[in-house]
Length: 308
Image (cartoon, rainbow, N blue to C red; front, side, top):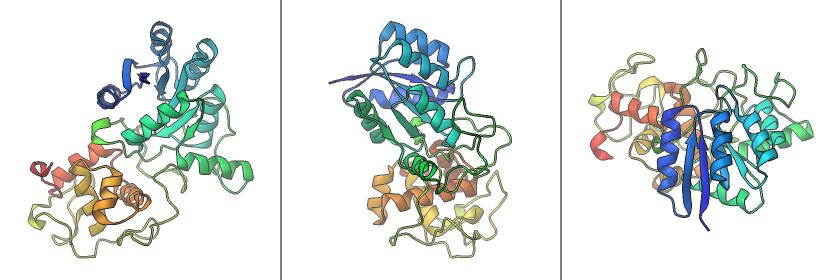
């Protein structure tokens, strides 16, 4: 059965990337796209999609209000939230509005397609990190320290999830004044794991960042150039911006277009470990998604565009 999907995101690059990506998947038909909640409502009324992929932060009408109205007026249309924000307030507001799925933009094509199919079948699908946060909140064992009480639309101080949106998904523009990693709870999002698995490389999700290890990745060391965000690397023999050799290798594989599963298979580590490495390297080089990470890898010489 073909799923009829509507894409809603205020960032044109993200929106167009999703439309292109979903159009390549079997059993997926994109019936339209919208840049805000008001436009989404009009399209849902005309197209009656099976599933709406909904961003949260949008002008005129945000994703929470749009979800609430879609579910009230068109109960046969399901909503899957696709966002960079996983703070308690955003999660609870979206679910209370009627969303049946909640994914971060770290999700790959397979995860998005699976969520669409799942909600069409009457079930729900949540990002694993979001599930953990909900469990922590319900049991009182964790959650968003200092976050506003659940409910309502996301506030201005909601912490963004570190996006690993693939190159094919394009990118979402970061909010002004936010440094990557700032204000993000330690357990937020699917990219957060309890720590590297036994198969992980020298990367660590905690502790000081060290750039003293030798460069053991592939590609010529001499081609490593300065980062536009933090200046040149401290040593010509180490990856720039404090990246470990393993993180640099993961970045190089991202630049080649490999998925998380493919990277895990190539490096003989778990997908959870890959996510940890990606999350760490994104924070170090201050990028929000795979598109920016690929540009960084090419700019610094960690990857060669001809390898893709």
